[in-house]
Image (tube, rainbow, N blue to C red; front, side, top):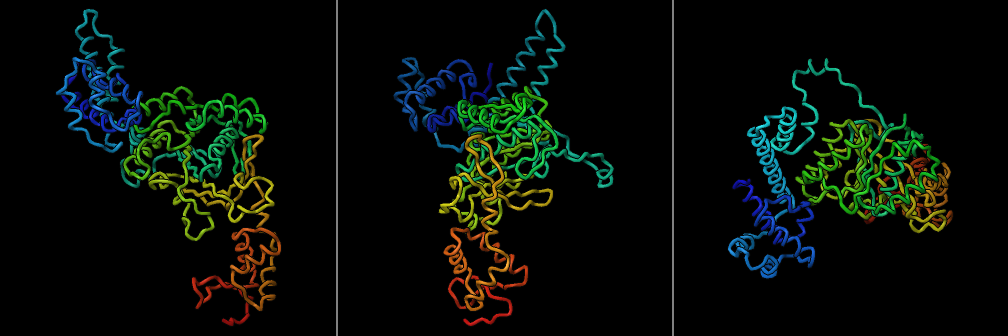
Length: 496
């Protein structure tokens, strides 16, 4: 049983994949998406062509040969005549509409058959059928469907009993809130989420600079590492971190690298929802990394808004905190004046998700330490951590280091110690020694020459401490190209 709109949708989808076969994977298409007969057989032939040859487009002659001598050449020609390259989000909308209509039609047929059956109607079965039919008719699930919106006056709203969101990790993750974790390539984003999850499952506190009030259950859906690698890291972490047996039941790992869950399709959304239901009750859902869940373009507002809506849906309906990892786009060091000023500006792609986050963690490389030969570990094992919060005071930046032996992270004093190698009052002494003033760039060079490699940030921190103590002043040096910063002893005279 089919109808005209379903046939039209199938034709549009088949035409699109002849022009862009890779959309088959993006939409997670299977033969069951198409009605039996010509439409299904044509899809199977196109899919086989793509699997066998991996072409950028489908060759009509080779496809006709694969379909055999009984091929309807007029129908086949209509697919290629109308073949155009379409955006992935438009294609996904077509698939969603097809699956909704086909699903609704299937349920209606089932209900009609029951009504005509001599055995009569099974009320429980009919009720279940109608509930399933509602899902197809209502359309995509978004946050608004997870909880009814409040309607009423301000007076009514004030009187409404709304409990405070439960803190799961103090100062970072609360129930029904969204944590966005970002960093440059190989900045240990996955390790950070895994480390956070194990500490949370064990109720082991503190974790880095954060307190975990009590143990909880976390589902980590990891779609970047293979199963072997993920298992190896977890085994090392459990042993190295001294976690109790409670983590074995409260930390739930899922690896979808070979068959990733895509949150841009109805099928992918349902897969994740089924996974959540399987392990309820849950407290935190961790998704790693964003690119594996989103097949749309990262700079496209529609695809990113859809992903945001699905995150909102899950966190509100199941009353869980959701953590999502993503890459930074900028390769500029955090101390570079041309680097983004705000943490949200570092995340790759459209700002919709970073704007929606209740908390953000940014993993930056240690400023000015790349060539430091005195670091105890490789430079890439260190991160400067920046945390932004929608609700609450932003904590100071701190540093962490990756421990390869345990695949865990720990607080590091390397960055902090570098800043305090310059004692309070020393900047003033250098200024006096240089005649009462010195350019900041020359001051940085002086410290690198006298006390060894030190970051620009550490020197700037020392300058700020001396300025706060009233020992020095800073200003822009006028008449000099680029207006560099001039540091001078308080009360000294400018001799430019």
